[in-house]
Image 1 (cartoon, one colour):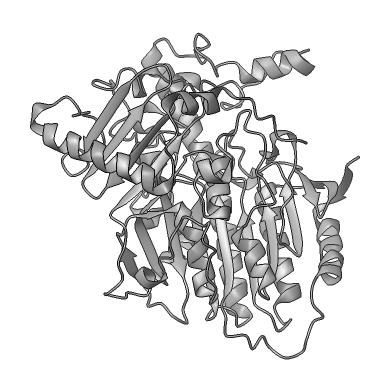
Image 2 (image 1 turned 45 degrees about the horizontal axis):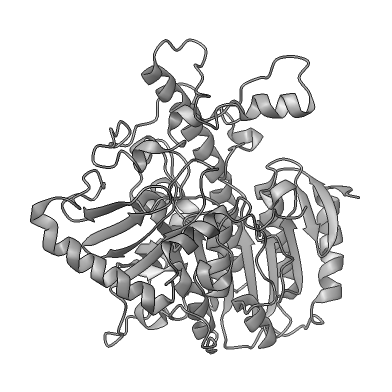
Length: 527
């Protein structure tokens, strides 16, 4: 049974809980030389909506507080996810292992993340860090290795924007208020409780926003009533040379549903009927015409404008709270020795290729934001273009804490890269594998690899399609050149290198076995 708490009362309860699970507070400042680590991760926040990455929306919208992390530290331009979907990406980040090693392949019918395996937060905790996780966990199993946790635990663990349900150290609590504010304020309250304990702390601050269905805080509703947001240059992609892959999905603007668009349901609808009405638009054959639209093109643009404005308004609240957190660190003498990372679980399409959502190896969802500040060690205003995977995050955090990851961890620390070690050797390719099909969004399972110049992918579920992109000549990935004679040698070389990379990471099952993973019902997240 859920308890219902107002937000101020919830924080009072939180502080009481912290005192039960945290070391006794000391009057002296934290003398540990190891850095505090604050890992901020939003859900589906893409580089196109961060002005530090030169967003097309910069005339109307900015993220000054998130940008501040880049200005005072490093902006990474080539960080990629190994499986572009929420739960599996989080499992990769937490475990430092690819999906085929950590066992968490997909969201839909994906079961849950095995909590008995190694994770970097638990390793930090075992080695003297005070730890907390607040916000979206989305792994189906209770977090381990934390002194305190409070994660979204509504159906599917996606989280509600308003009056969210949390698993609060094992108790189900519904908190009145807006999720972004609740999550951030709880995290700051926790830091305030443990900052003088004499131990370093590690905080995972995971925002639900800006995940679908994009409900802004009330103060940011209708932020742009008289403005048409710009359209990405690939908005009207015709999918030539990619007809069976990009051209055969349920994630174009046509598939934004009634709830996404904040449409008012007919009076009298309840229960299952109301749910079906809200979700109408998700599947093929359910495209619907908004009021006043007479053509498909008008409908697509109308839906885009509603979607992008709500999305950016959700990001606005996240940026506010990042700013509040950074100010708190400054005002409490914690800035210098605290690593602050801002990232997302993957990228996202904001009308790019006519899409919303993620899943593909194409750049807007494959590429992730990654900004890092650590004043004690890092000079401000840096940029970095090394090829980094989210499988590399865990060993990097451990390395900064003076710890080594066990042999089972597949990622590699990029601490030397961050610190500008000119002798640092680094990878020249990153790996990707996506498994879920057909729901949600009807994206064909595929694996692939990106190098600095090229990207190759094999779509294999009920088709056998290869794609190759020249990322220098075609950065928007509009021309699949796998059958272009001019790229025959490149295609052969890339296929060979991909095969070797799959051996290196241990993803060597047969196509039939890959399809079995897609088809297998591992169960649903318990809630």
